[in-house]
Amino acid sequence: MIVVADASPLVALAICDSLDILGKLFDEVTVSREVYEEVTVAGKFGAAQLKEYLQEKVTNLDLNNVVIEGSSLDKGELSSIALYKHLQADYLLIDEKAGRRVAKMNHIKVIGSLGILIEAKKKGILPSLKPHIQILRDSKIYFNPTLLDYTLKLVNE
Image 1 (tube, one colour):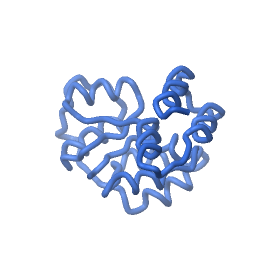
Image 2 (cartoon, rainbow, N blue to C red):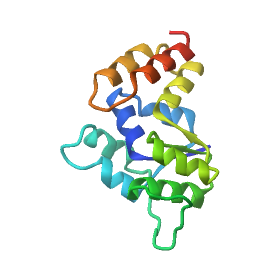
Image 3 (tube, rainbow, N blue to C red):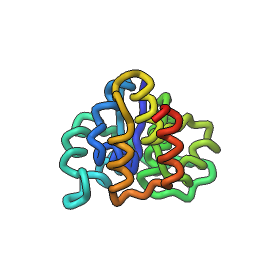
């Protein structure tokens, strides 16, 4: 299975030291050049970790002739959706509400960073989500607290 990842979920997974889960859930993890450049900017949280993790996972795609239905997204989100379509990937890893909406309009299967953590728990890769959810609560990335609570409830924690 192939997953194309957008920036925000990669940063969220890096924050809770869970990037390795992607390789355990998917055969191939790839990102667009635009996403790679967005998450590896010096000084950004997780940039060094993401630069190392994504080193062999970048796919270049010419976006000049790409048309995405309902698109009002940034370059990273657009390039991720275009790459998903180009590769005929199995999942698009994306957290932003607008990006998920456009992806669904384009018949793209989406999963978010919390969905990755849930799958990891279900498959026994993670023994508990509580520590990861707490790290996300304490981070500068915004997750709706109700959504974080619901995530724990889904896995009986």
